[in-house]
Length: 257
Length: 304
Image (cartoon, rainbow over all chains, first blue to last red; front, side, top):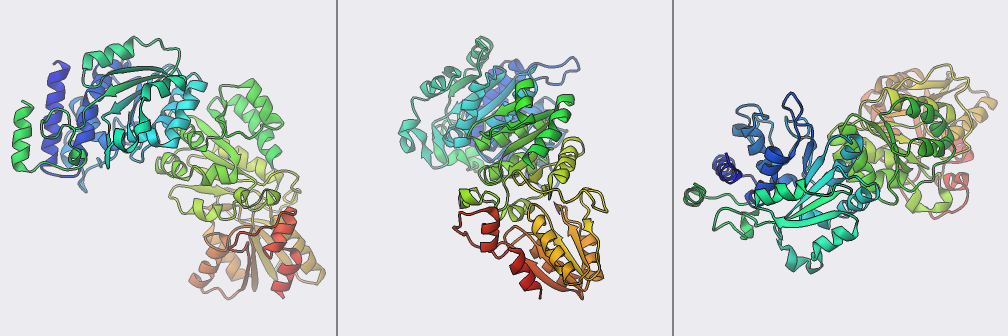
C-alpha cells in the first residue's frame, strides 16, 4: 500500500476513535502522521526477527493517536487495544506510556523526549533514535539544553523531526512567538544538520533522512498543516482538541476516502 | 563523602559498562577525574543544564544502563524536578540522583545552595527511594548498593568532604531499608541520619557523661522507611529524640511524630530539625545548624 492511502486510512481510524471517546488531539496527530508513518514503514531498521532495531520517541506525546493507529496496523499493539482507548479496561491513554507495546518512553509533558532520545542514542550507538517534536516543545528550555548537548556530543545517530504546523494550544506560533523563526538557522547554529521539507510529502521525508550526511545529529523540519486532510480542520485551531460531531464526522470521512 | 563516593564507584564503573556518570558542571575530584579520563564515553559533563542531565540518564536507563546523575543537591533534584519525576520515577528507571552538599552543608554559599526540604520533596514521588549516609564508610556501602543492587530511581543524599567516620564500630551492618543501630543504649534512643549524625553522637556522649544510657539509631533509608523498626524504637525506649538536618515538614521527624500517634507510643518524643525558614547566616556548617537550633547545647537543653 502506498503511503498516501495508508495515511488516509490512519486518519479515518483516528476519526472513528473520536466517535466513541472524544478525548484526543486530532489536529496535531494529523499534522505529524506522514512523519510517523514514514518512520515505521520506511526508516526504522528491523532486526532479523522483525522487531524494530531503531527506537522512536513521540516527544509531542499529545499526538500519540498517530502512533497508536500505526502500532495497531503493524500488530504491535495487542488486538482490540485501540478499541479500549481511554477506557478503564484499556492501557492506552491520551499520552504514551512506557511499558505499552511499541512505546519506548513516557511522554506528555513537553520538552522531555529529546533528552531521553539523546541518552538512548548514547547508550545504543548501533541504533538510530528518532524523535518527533512539536513547535511548542521548541519553546522549552530543556529542548534547547538537549539540542546543545546532542551536537556537542556528536550524537550522529539521533534524528529529530519537527512537526512545524505553526500552531499550539493558544494560537499561531508565528504570532505568539515571532522570534521562533527562522527556525532552521537556529538549529544549524546549534550544530545540527538541518533540512526543511514538506512534512506531508512522505517520499520527501524518507529521502531527506536517508540522504543525511550523518556526522552530526540531524533534524528534519517538516512544514505541516494542523488538521491536515480534512478541509474544515486544516489550520483551524479548535481542532487541537475538539472532536467532530456526527455531521462533521461524516463529511470528514467522505473527504478521506 | 565526595571522595568515598568517587573511590567506591571508580572500580565498579571500570568493570561494569552499564555505569555512566552524567554530571552537571561539577569538577570531578580524585578518582572521578580518573574515570572521566579513562572512560570519556561514560563520564558525560552536560554543563549547567540539569534538565538534560536527568533526561540523558533516563534515556540511558531505558536502554539498560545504570546511570548516576551527579551535581549539587539543589541542582540535582530541585532544578530538574519534573524530569526526575517524569523521566525517572514515572518510568521507574534505575537511576541514582546524587545530591552533593545536601541539607545546609554549603552554609557559606547561602540559601540557593541549601537543600533543606529535599527529603520531603523526593519522598512525595512514587517509586523514589532515598538513602542518606552519615559518614564516608556508609557512603561507600551505599554507592556499592546503588551501582549493583538498585533497580529504581534513588536520591543519594551526600554531604561534601571531611565528615568523620562514625560507623566503624557499629554493632549492625548497613542493610537497605532497615534502621541501623550505631550505638546501643537503653534509656534514650536518638534517631538521626546524614551529616548531622556527628551532632547526634556529641549529644549521646554528653548524655552518657550525665549518666544516661543512650542508643543512636541511623535511619539511613528515608524511603522506603523502616516503619516496623521505628515502631520498635518507639515501643522499647522511654525517651526518643529525632535529630534531623531537614525541614520539620515531610522528613523523618514528621514521620516519627505521625507514627508515635498511630502506634500509641508511650515514649516521650522530642524532635530537633532545621527551622521552616531561610536563614541568612554565612558562617560554618555548625554556625548555620546552631542558627536553626541544631547545636548540641540547644538539643541537650531541649532534652532536659
